[in-house]
Amino acid sequence: MSDSQLEFFRHRLLQMRNEVLERELDVKERLHQREVFADPADRATAEEEHWLDLRLRERESLLLHKVDDALRRIADREYGYCEKTGDAIGIPRLLARPTATVCVDVKGQDERIESQFRDR
Image (tube, rainbow, N blue to C red; front, side, top):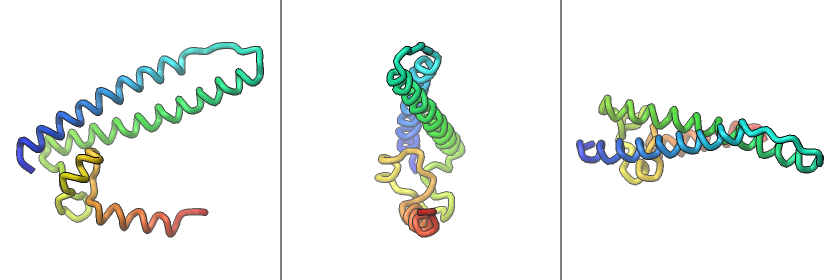
């Protein structure tokens, strides 16, 4: 990858990182808000929203780790190459998923294997 392409993706990943951190702060604020509801239906709704916020926070945390890993790969000039084959991942895939670590062919193989061995 050229320096200008790496800089483009670095900027894009930094923007993603800032957005994730903003959403994480919003979720943390909602998680710390504890209200007492007299109505069991209201309490059940609040607990469901709390559970969804916890799940969102977990997913955002995983995404943050992927973004940080991609930024490290840019600094090491390893970004844009498949971890399994060493081939170029391709600009269209990186535009769609800037945190991608494998090329489309490898990802397709992994998904086929996963679908065959997944519990149904």
